[in-house]
View (cartoon, rainbow, N blue to C red):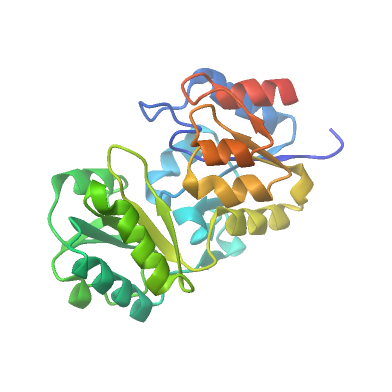
Length: 267
């Protein structure tokens, strides 16, 4: 192989099936790409603790992009360094106040592996509990003392769009926000200027792979910049329509081994 490519894969809705597993066909395609000398990188909104198992399943030896680009590191190389771009605490508290005034159902603040909940909620404790983080529940204004890596807000479904518009009007210059799909219409917030493309760009540079040899796979709102930045942006069949429109190619769904079909044809 003359020139290696970098295959960047989102997790939920892309690499993972609805059962949160990697199909045998997709796993084998990625392992074959690795064996041929290409690089495979995970780029996800999840924290590392909730993506480490998949990193190990694929036997990866590359940096990983977590929290939609807010946290980038190399799990196997401490000398690689850590890129952590959290939301400044004063801005985070202002955002939290805006959301509380909007009377949202719940607010979840993550500071790496510390998870802070406005209200105790069994669903969120299960959803954010992978990797055994430390949970705290109560007044977020007093509990949270460090810059948050991310903030997830749970509004009433009918008012999710209104909340996003309010956050844009009040905090557009200092935060980035993403929407999670059904059944939970969550709004995820990270520091302004942070996204998967920014994290992936740093990883590609460290690996010596130029943008034109980066192939990125995604399905959701938080994959938009990565799909647009990559030399080849590939949307899953189950992706949201705006992402499909922005992609260079649409492959099969996450339930149909879409990544495997593209990579096998590519190789």
